[in-house]
Image 1 (tube, rainbow, N blue to C red):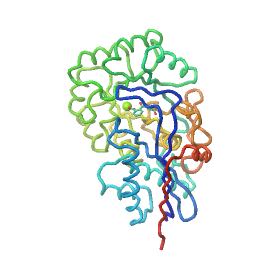
Image 2 (cartoon, rainbow, N blue to C red):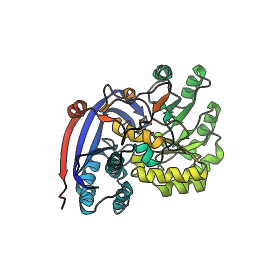
Image 3 (cartoon, protein in one colour):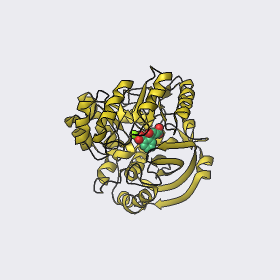
Image 4 (cartoon, rainbow, N blue to C red):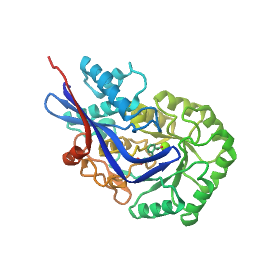
Length: 371
Ligand code: OSB
Ligand code: MG
């Protein structure tokens, strides 16, 4: 493929309601919309999912914009890309900065699929026509969590993820279980515990949680393996898995029974698929994590979730979970708890140009010289 230009747009949009975690509250979401245009005028879209501040990983919108503009796009200018894998391999010469890499790489996957008139799901090897949808409850009190759960149940969601931390865990989950004894719930701790909290974590076995996501430090695979031996609730790793090797090590050490795959966190769809394939082989279940993202990243998540190993409902909620109006058309919708996987070319969603325009704060255009 011949890239003619790349456009980067930093957009900013308020969330419908604040997203609380023990690491901070997200009120306004910034992101980077990546458009890669080929010499025939076909556009592929990706999304840089780093946050404004480095609370979840070390990247930020500003570092991503810098790495894309000053490091990765110049690399793309130097080497032709024939298939999406070439991008992932080209970017291996640069350390980390996974969300910056993924934003560009995923746009190239979309472009590649569109050029071949295939859906992204088909290009990735997807086998599912619809995927079960999960939703995250990130409220700061029991009462507002219960209200959110009730609303999301009515909307048909199949799995509820509750944010927990040492000051909002046992009594909190007990409060939820009192009203919803059988609801499929899981907890996400975002690294808020240490092994000193072993008794607290053991006690959570009382709640028949589907899993506990990332209880311990983001860079700790050994202690998670010790913890998993002590608790019945399956551990799912999120922050700890930033590469294929992390996934392999965690599985070999018994640090988790489930992996949350986010393409942004691992550097793109190529690495995400490698992790999926390895887990599939080893019988480790995976699901697709969310990043409070806009529709483009969500569309990529839908395609990724159509792979056979994604057996657990992911953080794939409807556009209206976070946004008054999304930047894609149609918006992502959940019906009876399922999202349909598009079979039209590429990510299978169009761009809501008006919404994209009104939310754009910065725009950068990179023109490629094609000899
Ligand atoms: O830890 O999974 C996480 C959102 C932003 C950053 C990290 C996480 C999350 C979520 C789910 O919990 C968000 C979603 O549904 O998009
Ligand atoms: Mg998580």
